[in-house]
Structure formats: structure tokens, C-alpha cells
Length: 72
Image (cartoon, rainbow, N blue to C red; front, side, top):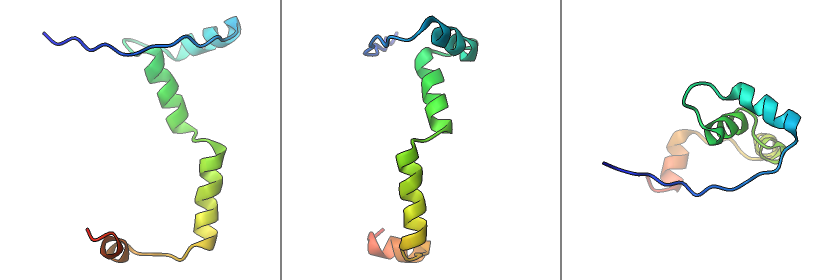
């Protein structure tokens, strides 16, 4: 038998927020799973801005060049 123990924390939220969060929790999914799924679907705006900046400002590299540069 294997027991996995996760470190947990408490996050204060309004009752309305908790009710909304519960509506995303289906079956055996944990609140941690729900929150991670939501965050994965909507990355932070800073990440998006940096990605767009790189697309505009940085030179395009194909995978062959990237592999060579990283010595893969």
C-alpha cells in the first residue's frame, strides 16, 4: 500500500467564490486539480505579454537551429 501526503494550505475566499469553485468540482477531482486546470486554461497576463514580445522582437529559429544551439 502506498500513501501520498500532500502539503496543504488554507485560502480565504468569499462564500460566493467558494460556491462557484464547488460548481467546477466534479467526481473525485480535488480543489487543487480544479484550480490548476483553471490556471492552465488562462495563463498570467505577464506570460502572454512576454510571449508576444518575443514573437515580435526575436529572430525566428527553426528546431534544427535550436537543437544545434542547445547541443541536443
